[in-house]
Every structure is written in C-alpha cells, then in structure tokens.
Length: 178
Image (cartoon, rainbow, N blue to C red; front, side):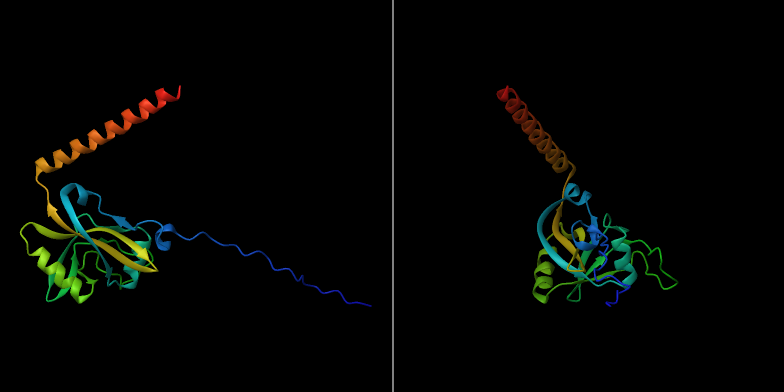
C-alpha cells in the first residue's frame, strides 16, 4: 500500500511587493526646480554624497529639499551646504542634523576642474537633483551662472512662443485630418 504524503510538492507562489520607484532609481528623490529658472545651467556633474544611514532612509521617504542648497570647494574637497534632509520617522535620539554640511564624492581631477570654473565671477555650484543609482545616493551638480530679471523674462517669453507654436502645429494637423 502506498503512503500518501501530507504536504504537497507544489510551492506556494511568492508574493512580490513592487519596489519603491525612488529606491529603484526610477524616479528622482528630490529635484531643484527653481534652479533652471534662477540660473543658466552650463555644465552638469554627477557626484556621490557622504551620508549617514538615517539620511538615506529619509531620502527614500522623500524628505529631501534642494531649494536653498549650493556647493563649495574647500581644501581640495567638495561640500554641499544647506541641503535639508528631514529627520527619519523611525529614528531615535541619534538622528541626523537636518542641514549639516555634507561631503561630495568626486575624483580629484573633477574637484580641480570645478575649483577653476567656480572662481569665475558669477559662477557657482547648484545641486539640481538627488537620485538613487545602484543603491547609492547621487547628486547632479550644475555649474551655474545667475540670471538677471530680464533674463528670466526673456526665457519665459521664449517658452510661451514655443508653446504657442506647438499648439498651432497641433491645430493645423487636426484640420488637415478632416
């Protein structure tokens, strides 16, 4: 007589929870939208950021703000100032300081190149976005030159003209289809 087994040989299907798009690198963790309005973004660089554990977890939660942040080069090293990362919700007494100075991880040649370019009058380093790449937090830095008010108005006019041109083209394509 054959004996029946009490367990089945089929495995139960695994439940896979979809990964957070910020953590997976599919969406930016923080974006500095006013940067392109207030500055001419001349050149962009990618840099790692030296962070503490609770800071990374807060960035994953979306608690980073780049609005007032800027970069400096000091003693052959690059730093990010005024980057606000809110406290981690499940943190304890040793939670991080929200606006501490954070070191940017760049190659020596890149730091030297940025130092030369930022010494030109009116040029500065502005972080434009924070994102995850292979599980590491990266910061996109832009070498930027400040805009005057008339520059901002001119940019807005050009944007409006492009918008109207696209609308006119779409409208004419709609008439031709009939």
